[in-house]
Amino acid sequence: MKPVTLHHSDILTQGAMAHVTRATLTSQRPKPLHSHDFYEVFWVQNGTVRHHLPRGATTLAEGDLICMSPGQAHGLQGKGEAAMVAMICLHPDVVRGLVKRFPDLRDVAFRKDGPARFHRDVRALATLNQAAIALERSARDALSTTAFLLPLLSGLMADHGGLPTGLPVWLADACRAARDPAVFRDGAAGLVALTGKAHPHVSRTMRQHLGQTPSDYINALRMDYAARALVTDTEPLAEIAESCGIPNLSHFHKLFRAQFQMTPLKYRQRFQRDVIQP
Image 1 (tube, rainbow, N blue to C red):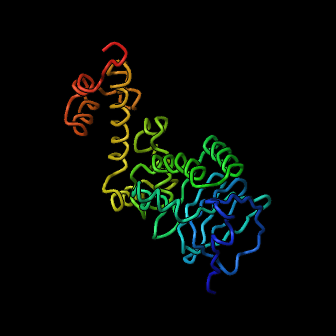
Image 2: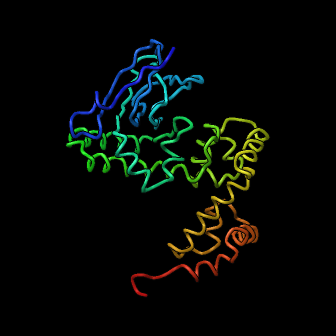
């Protein structure tokens, strides 16, 4: 069945660049799907939602956030009681202006190949809801809408961390979560545990999409963390290494040199600056 097309001219009041909607979903399967000539951001506020797309359906949980571009068809179905979503219709001129200034948004948030999926934890979701309320109470003009979008998109870009498009959702979620020191201190095993899949399968999938093994990916995160620590505090090198989950100082030196082409000490001497008493 051909999707129904929604138009921003029927939703946005004169001069408005955004419209905020909250809806409790029924368990009825959407027929037909719908598309729109505007950009849309929506997130699961409560419960579980089935997100129907032309190629199939995925299950969304509380905190899952979807960015959709014009022309992409979908439909929403509640699973269980109190399945609730919040969604924002965005005038295409606002988003196109941001994409023109920040082209990476086209590959991360507002993709042409399909909806982009992210997850907001409890704290980020609360912040997002407060921002949506502020937008709803504002004039919803270009300035107010941009003020809502910039922190949200900046956070999504940071969470994305340069991960390529087409990465399986389960692996993308695990890679983002692995930036937490509590995870990468456990090494590749910590990353694999997040996926809920067998280590050989995770390794094959990472080689295919990222050109890295789980150990390679985790060690890069560890060294990035170490590099930041070296220039932002004065902890002894051994303590920084241990906080990365690498108590063997010789191995830590080897990994750091491989990533930054200099020793940790030289890196600290070169980049650490006292801006209070230079």
